[in-house]
Image (cartoon, rainbow, N blue to C red; front, side, top):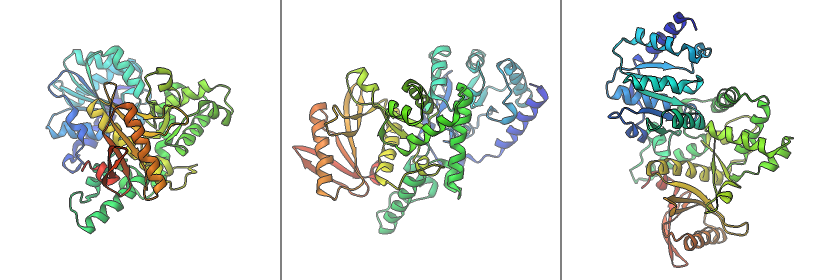
Length: 426
């Protein structure tokens, strides 16, 4: 690339962030995961527009650290190749000074050979911050080329607690008004999700649809050279229309006229890598059973209906289950736990989530929007009790929309928690 173009882009990007007010930004737990006292590359990965860039700016500016910023998702830098990276570094020095010690490379996966460039910066004693929107690309290349030299931080869209902070919702007061405010906020959260920018945009459908198309085109089609992007888009819509359900690759292949379920599995993996969906494995000590019949969840509930070709009714039960899944992902990443669903056979009663630590079940979580019906209550609680006995775990939680109490069933104590209290960890 022409050096003058790179210089112009970097100068304009510097101006963009100059007056950013980090004090006005929502505090996020992931801020505590950065390791400023190490020589590791700080790598933040997650779905597009989840706040990765903002998080890095916030922690750097919050510590008053001078740093260079390069946004590689800028359309003017799309033609940048690995051979241009040395020119890019020269431009960084020209714009930010020869003594710059911190550099923030945004959406780094757009450049082939980026890992070699980052490795060189680390060897030169530079403190490197990196963001990216592709899980496998970053993780595999980091593991291969930066072994032991990076700190990976996964970021998801806002949790409900962060959503409340953004909306200035009172999460502590026990008055009727405060309770009603929280319920109104939670309904909005289930419907619209937690993408930070989405919270102050009126045309939410247009925003989510454009985001979905960016993920398909930029993070998957271009990266993996997909020829039939329309089929990929159709599979994405199918999974989002059937969230919280088991993925049947053979059925999807037949539905979209693909010759092989292997192709479908590859496309679904691409969607997972780009953080559009998450796949939940079955709890089993047999590897084959863990891999088969994985359940698919949206990375944010905003994807469920705020898009073209959404054929879902407002099924709040599935939205609630999806929201609980995402919250468990956040918590498990902090505690280094794993999450599965439990269904040992087709005739067995299913438990939505099994939280495991070093292979041992430490909590069973069932989700049911409404348990007022006696039959529903028996079904959900009996599934927990049965799994509790088989997995030797007595920490049982039943998340509902708005009910909280402890119940004794089959000699087991089940903590029934309203979704709001559970999400706010109260």
